[in-house]
Amino acid sequence: MPIPSGEPMKQTPKALFISHGGGPLPLLGDPAHQEMVSCLTNIALSFPKPDALVVVSAHWEEKIPTITSGQSPSLIYDYYGFPVESYEIQYPCLGKPSLAAEIQRLLATAGIDSRLDTSRGFDHGVFVPLKIMYPEANIPCVQLSLVDTLDPSLHIEIGRALKELSRQNVLVIGSGFSFHNLKAFFAPDDEESKRLNHSFEGWLEKVCSGREYREEDRAEMLIRWDVAPGARFCHPREEHLLPLHVCYGVAQSPSSEQFRIDIMNKESSFYVW
Image (cartoon, rainbow, N blue to C red; front, top):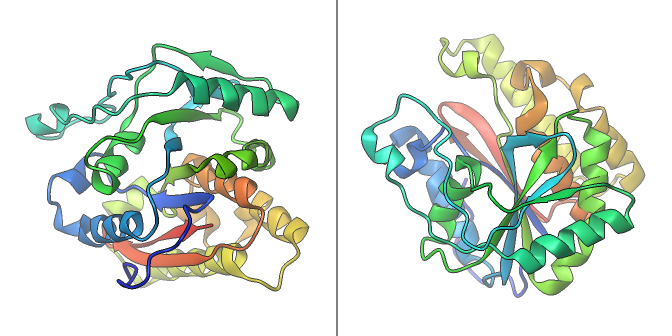
């Protein structure tokens, strides 16, 4: 369910993992994304605005971590077959080259090579959720790529390298999808697919939020995510899950809030640290 109204958090969270839905549909009034839009809107209202955003999107993979460092990134309409207005969406937030350089420095300190990219824009994993959360586009943003090996332990290490950013009121957002089986989205929703979907979501919530685990054990479970019940049904390829690993690496603690909602008739989840 979307988070209830009430006392807002006094501080910006360290990290937030979101399920960002299907292409531009959340911005087009699609009924199957109503809960997602409501949840994102309420989450953004529940804590003070960050001074800057770092978004790790499932839709950008590179050989080494790559960071947008342009002053005014364009938008990349990396989806196909949608109405013409989908390709006219605007989200004119600024980049922040100084933050990009700081991220590169933090990664280097952790022994992780990275590079800056002055020309790349923001893909829909960035501008779609941000347009819902912060429609004024007045918070500077930097995008950080995944690494194309899709190594979960490396993505946790990348997150650990960025943990200092929270002290600067920078929010790290992992923009993926806790369920991402494209064939299943368009297939009949039978009892077995529901069971696998719910089983994986239950496992993920327990691992991310359970306070009974030591952090080294929690990290190991996330690294070995593919042995969880329903794992490979929910994620035939894991690029939409790995932004969560970066978020966990930033926080290295159980999540403080968890939200399980329906997106495109699949149970999906958000996690706040």
